[in-house]
Amino acid sequence: MAKIFHDKDADLRVLKDKTIAIVGYGNQGHAQGANLKESGLDVIAADLPGSSAWKRAESDGIRVMTVSEAAEKADYIQMLLPDELQARIYREQIAPHMTEGKILGFSHGFNIRYFQIVPPRDVDVVMVAPKGPGDLVRRTYQEGIGVPCLVAVEQDSSGYALKRALAYAKGIGGTRAGVIQTTFTEETETDLFGEQVDLCGGVTEMVKATFETLVEAGYQPEIAYFEACHELKLIVDLIYEGGFMRMWNNVSNTAEYGGMTRGARIINEESREEMKMILSEIQSGEFAREWLLEGQAGLPVKKSLEKIEAEHPIETVGAELRAMMPWLQKK
Ligand code: NDP
Ligand code: MG
Image 1: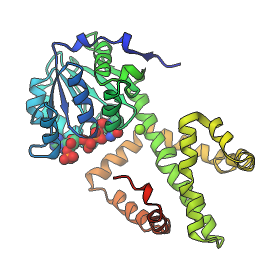
Image 2 (image 1 turned 60 degrees about the horizontal axis):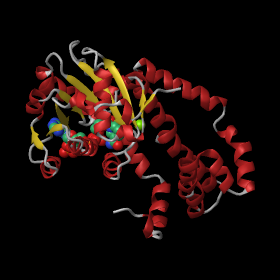
Image 3 (image 1 turned 90 degrees about the vertical axis):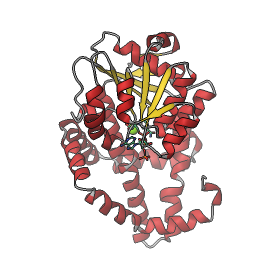
Image 4 (image 1 turned 60 degrees about the vertical axis):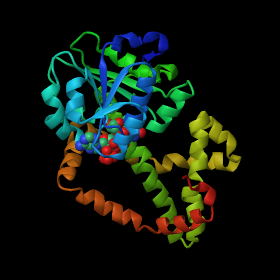
């Protein structure tokens, strides 16, 4: 079982004499930065001059500057730039200031795991990764609860790397909820696997295949949309809140029997074999190479697939039906 740290396991004083730079005041940056400041730590921020993120940092009362200025001033540099830009910005603006004894922090392990950023040996390299979006990290902190986080140490040059990362996690409110220890490798590989196989890739293909099967068999697309897509949220909410048994107990007996007997025919041995293939592509770095080259090429595959997806009939019928349910629209 995983090691889980709580408030009593972390000491904010470990970071009292340190300046923390939030590099990238975006989704995660604004939340982590504002929480750390409210926890009494010395926080500065970096973002693009003139951007809305820059103004947001100012209005949060945080000193904001360019990346290279922040990297020079700070002892603890938290990388909260978009993952695909981190390596270049690190090389050009951060590496020259990565002097002995500093701490380089991340909220996702990709760039370290796949050697896009190779920090010097005499700095600590750590991860504190909230398991939720920035707005939730900020709101729960203000409510006095906090979002669970992952913590990892890739490089412990000082001998205090874990203590420092745990203090950071406490500063953003994470230890109130609980902080689970992992490694950069585990966090990165499981994150990629989850989004490819289950969360993003698996779910959309399952919804499309369900919809297409019904429509090809002559059922109306509107009815197919409700069954394949709309009702998915109700099921996922039940599982999210109370686990599989809450869900099975809240659907009809017919749904429970049908689902329990048929599900394994859909995610069958062949699907599981393919999952293992996908996992081995992640472990070998093959997926990372493909994605990094795709980025360098200007995203030709991503853009093409987005176009095809946007033109799928489920998107048209879905938009019409969602317009009948205005309460679904958030801001
Ligand atoms: P965002 O894109 O929301 O924020 C990145 C910020 O960096 C933006 O304000 C962006 O400005 C700014 N930026 C872009 N280019 C530069 C530059 N050249 N110089 C200075 N600033 C720049 O990213 P996220 O917060 O979503 O992600 C940050 C990290 O957190 C990633 O490692 C991600 O994997 C991780 N993470 C994210 C989670 C999430 O829920 N979003 C959850 C857990 C981890 P602009 O918007 O103008 O481009
Ligand atoms: Mg993830």
